[in-house]
Image (cartoon, rainbow over the protein chains, first blue to last red):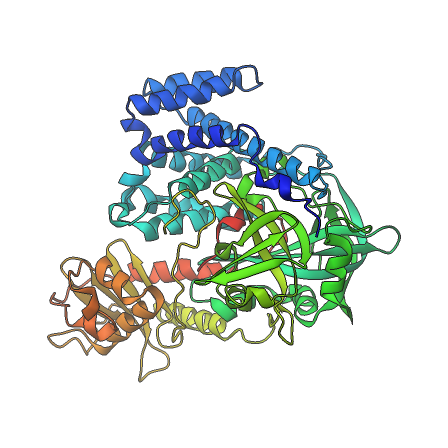
Length: 461
Length: 159
């Protein structure tokens, strides 16, 4: 086996130092900016120094100096979020560069199309979101309570209704829900500080500007699904189907298709797929039955994202693992370019390197599995696998028997990790999230809820 | 959670399947365990019920504010059902803690275990408060789906 990933075992230059600076900054968010002490002032001043000689130098300096003087204006928190996001974006790019050097090439920079200004009501709701996040930062996560969290529900409802802020609303709903469920924070065994500040940062950046359109092309041809990254919180499900797009004319390319749906908490586990609208059935059916999806006139963005448009039909069966091997095995002569992220979306935890592996050494112990492949040790990141998926159990054991897998190289807490999407664990069938997915029929839960609501409305009238 | 600096973490414990036809809505919110319970006898009727944290006061009425006839000196069967479903949704320890019930966690496994600690009184309240929470909840079922990329959703893998 090649040792092409051995360079990944060394963290990029400056990574560890930056982590220490971020940890120190994050303490401000725990205490609350209204309560910072000298250590926190020092931490912010260190951040200010990092930006000297960069385009953000003046803004970051003004922001840090103001916050150190306990002068609180919303713009200081937006700049702080932008600065923190920029630092993590830089970490992401350093990691991406390492992947490139290891042969997983990518990063054609996505090109932008024309900019858009949000309409007045949308602007107001985004401002309200930023204001809420500022209040949270002032109070501090350790002092978070229902009084500072609950009022945001009204703005969230507006964000849900507006097509341009569905994505922002979906994310902030998960954030609010997680914070409310964590109360009282004082009684948590461990407070996930890094995670919470990452969520705060992401929310603030997203509430400052809508995603700007990227240059796109029109895609028609075949989309071969190779696996599904299923994300969800109690009020939304977002399924990303990773695969290969084979145009009617031209070479095969990487592509992924995202299906998002709001949901209620009671729609969970095996029912998650039923939350997704029936118009997306062909995509789900193709994934579940290991068949190609024939697509027509779909928007394909320069990040590799296909936007499902309903014009798709299920085609013939194909060998998922063989296709994954053909295009995603390190050193393959048919290697295709890796997915990229819009620069505003870059964070180490959102990096995803598509990879096929076989011939690896692997072991499982205590519900965790670890592989050694191409000179790199990779633990399977169980936090990335939905508990609704058969993969969660399969990936937790019997690793020495695994024959091959297709998945995503991920990075979190200072280490590369593996998120398997498609696994040949030595059993009769391939194991993958979505292997039994179906969103047609089985809408009982939702039907019951709508019927009950109807009865309440009739009574009131 | 033993990894304070990991960013992608599963943070919710998964709920167990619920009897949604019986209890269409249950939530822990604003120091209450509250929800909507279907009538056992009349298919056209629903009840709106809640428990209050700390006092463990409770109430149950139809949506037209008619008190539940089962509230005779103690919680009615709708309140018991609400408690059972809350335990399926959130787990017994969390429900007990949210109600401010301070008991040995080993003795709190099921809805009935928590009901034994309900020592409060009837506390009449307008049904519209919980009813409007239920309608907000239901809106989530109505929103249109999208196919926009959402990389930040990778932070959420539970619930």
